Image (tube, rainbow, N blue to C red; front, side, top):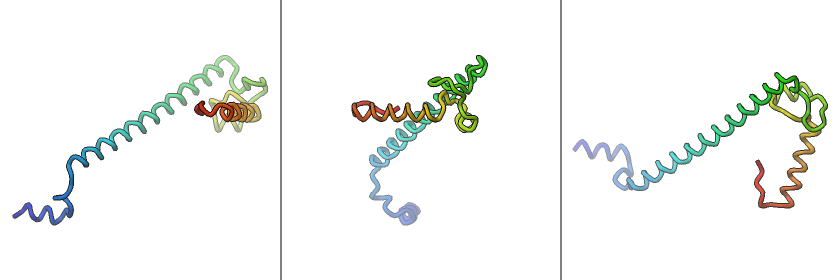
Length: 110
């Protein structure tokens, strides 16, 4: 008799398909794994860029735009310490990349 109480407390438990539950669990696990992997890639990329910024600092090149050679604005460096370009040069690079991608839509944005 005790089993009947459990089913009353969890309506639909008799109709539940254990195979569907396993598929949902597997799908959630895959989604979590993909999200975790993507997050890990982003964090590794950020750490590598910060390490490169530290190397530029040690060589006395930190804060100098790699495109035009002018100083990168201090506010930009505070917001994005790994920045390698000043705001105007970064804008030009992004516009150029968008135009190039628009010309060849098979390319993915990175």
